[in-house]
Image 1 (tube, rainbow, N blue to C red):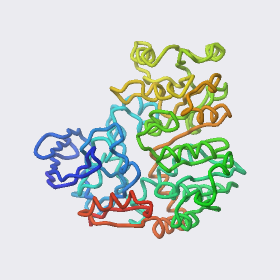
Image 2 (cartoon, rainbow, N blue to C red; image 1 turned 90 degrees about the vertical axis):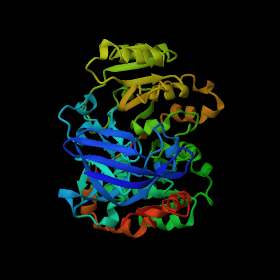
Image 3 (cartoon, rainbow, N blue to C red; image 1 turned 180 degrees about the horizontal axis):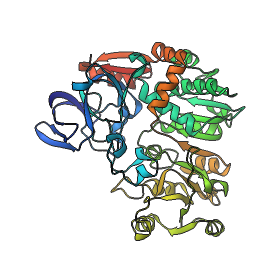
Image 4 (cartoon, rainbow, N blue to C red; image 1 turned 135 degrees about the horizontal axis):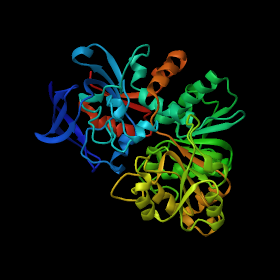
Length: 480
């Protein structure tokens, strides 16, 4: 098959330019992608061509220039598409991770074998990392990532990717009985987290309260429609008056100031959901924290055993930065394989024979300050590999937190009080589709309330700029 078309590439200058693309190949033999007549990307077998119907604009698109992936690129990953050739007439939503498992490769890597295929370092990401995205008229989707859309309306389907991501936040940080949780920034993804919390509460007959926190009139009504019990308007109520009020705060603001507010108002946990590629509260690489779905926890014996609820693994290997207290090092050596040093030492260990044929990550990393948190997440500017395994934990020794610099004092106090930061990324589309089928009122609410603006594909720049405007909620670009 040969598909030749023009699309608008996103540039590091936060602008777009037209480019000519060509997809040459087939599912069995692989694909060559050309850009302006020059080789752009070579793909192996396992991809099917799809024609874009519509694509949503999200916070990641808006902050794409800050992310550590090459540009220019056709961005957009909230895709509703239709099949070509033998799939003609079928509609699909597309999971964004291009991995061994998604392509149906018979030889998976260690990350797939560990049950975390979406964290394979070799993955590409639709509309984010190399693989051309949904702001073009055609995409190439890994065969197992293209999910047939049956039983869910196309109006709600274009929201499937962010709804699945919202649901992942609830799975990673589920409210407990009697909790009072808050969604900070209930706009694009935040509104979907409200809907996911509401449906989770109903399906599990749970007892917790949901509050939305916003600064915009149109989001007050929207938050109620999407399942919030209460709405707090920060133009009326000062953040200072909300300190330690909410057991869990789901931060979807995608801003440094929003993250700092979340830290102040959380009683037990902040769940960081959106990214902006910038340092926040004196911590570097929090975007990558979300990409790897890592957690940052105060050091405790219980937290050395941390893993996601649906995992059954046992932590064995822990790396400890040199300035962590001797008392902690001694405790850890009683139960774990402990390695001590700086980030360069850690990388040397992970590339040694000792980790041959093992996942090249530590289960847990212990640090003594926020700067080391950044090094644990991304120790080397030349690659995107963390020291800690995806969905693993960074444990913070707060012994000397009162000596941390002023711009890090907020998180110092946060961890000293025993509070935690968790994160999550993509979600399970099959689970999200099932939930929407079981809860038609949620589907109806998404269709009716969330999409605020639609633009034809030739108005992509206008759609992108409108998505930046706080007056919008969800902006969708239509190709048909």
